[in-house]
Image 1 (cartoon, rainbow, N blue to C red):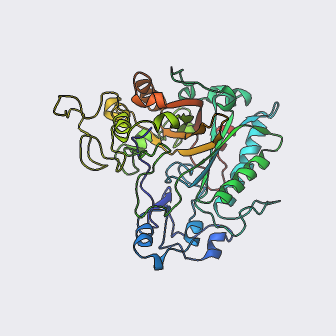
Image 2: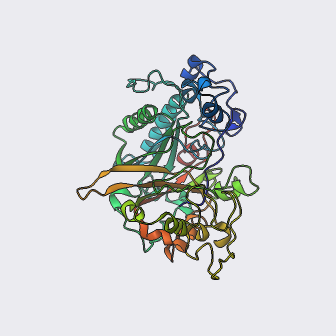
Image 3: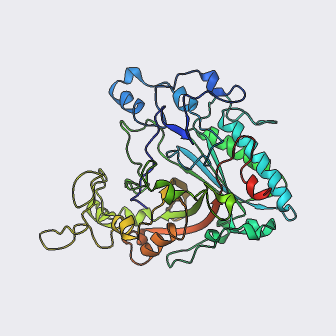
Length: 430
């Protein structure tokens, strides 16, 4: 959970999605971003390198707030949005079940509506009709909306022959305590943005668009640090206070696409350039965790709490020395440390792109916080990605006694929609 890092934050010259840069002209109508002007073009982008450092060093030259709102992600592209972008400050995960009788035709009409709404909202525009005005005055705020299909979707739409083998249900793990009512679902939607109202506006629009075709099965809310909250770009921390995501695969690495995205020459063909999302609600037993000393917490993870450096020495990005011992001959990085167990080279090269949100759903009658991680990971094949690593964790991860997996889902997320298409069109109309 703590040893793979988010993609590096994007600068204005880096692609938003499939080679579309922030400086590229917008297509279609006028968005809120145009109305905001160019205030954010050289400022804080996704809380990234550049604006954040300047903010900390020269408060008098603070980046205008509109820079966060002005940032826009393109809806159309090779891959769906919400995979390659960095962590977003606010997020909603929601699963739907199709109504009885909706079938393939109803599902196609729903995905067409959802795609049209997502395109408008991600451009900073209102919905096509009866907009709630919740996001009025705000720009796109890096909004992304991502759609996926669960295992049950294919039986409900008569498309069983098009269901990928990779979408077979996840195996049971000994540490699971899953709530079936908050697991799986026919359809899954991930919403992320750097503004809470923009994210909620999108959630409400998606729910309204579902109409009588589908009903909400479960819904979860999450958060991350806001852009510019730290003086310089750094790996995010989770609710345990640990840097979470140091060794995440990064776009540009030679094998990144191979690990994360389904190849274009695949069967079924509708999954070309798509990915598989594993979604887990992982409750952190914070009262137990916080009773440990800092050194005990570091031994559980295998990294320094202050800076994320491996216990074997160096900085956060220093390669971990798994064989290093102390004066007593004991391994410096414990054999059951989370960071050791999750390393790709300890799991046959298995890797996942993690884009989680933290969550806090209140405090129960005993004063215990219901808080933890909305774990979302992306991979070309969940059996070779998530399942491989989770099986290893299940056999002896020191962190397992401080977390509880309470819900789970696996979803096939098709490639991005081309101009004039809706998400899933190649499956539903193929």
